[in-house]
Length: 305
Picture 1 (cartoon, rainbow, N blue to C red):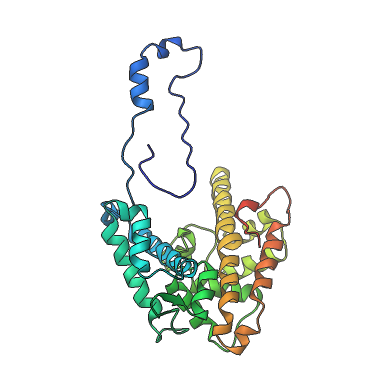
Picture 2: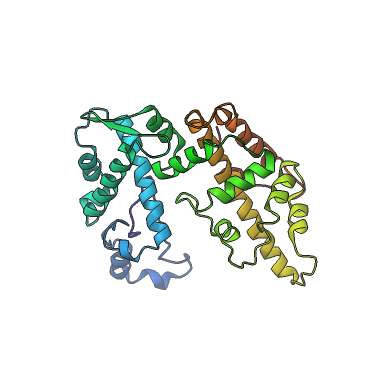
């Protein structure tokens, strides 16, 4: 009925009969049954609608499938043809997305076998294919192979900033990876004009204030232009957008990045391997989990380790 396929349970509730007082709406029983029990075929996002999917959406889907391939290799060490088996096991493989999902999986296999990329090969083709130590770490990160290689490039550096300066650098460096879907963050570092209060020049200060557990409203007001003449309703909308940004980017994406860096740190420099990336993620979550004034962060978006 939803016209889409996803893992997990989907519950659709429609009160087509209307409130009990409207008895007249119950007369056309046949018509109501046709609407209620009508069904349209499920469609895979990798099928016929693929060309109409925005580029960023395509990249996210490809990254997701690539990450799933790493997990599949690790969980099925005896699979002789992992691409074919995963293709057939997917919904896309059973519909019009078969060719597309096979393409994505085949390209991913080629990339993870490449021993010239950052970190080396993620898998070796020893019939069957198996993950290397790097591939196992990449799988534990939850990110796609391509993003993991970008992380290893970062981890190969000999010096890292600390605190808010480091977090700001990470958000800038990884704002455009497929797994990062917040459009505001992309705009901040794109150079394109935008109306959000968070800018490249104040994001580090904002992160510092958040780590100090400053009242969220106060953090927001410090970011606003002193010359702003926005109406109260507009300001409240801006504040809601700011809270959404903090929940999605700072409380969710940033700790995910940090924990992934921790999983991959041994494939970087000695400095990277000696850095406690997971501790940083916990520090951010602890700071954001603290209640400030009348504003609460959305704990549902803060990962639990």
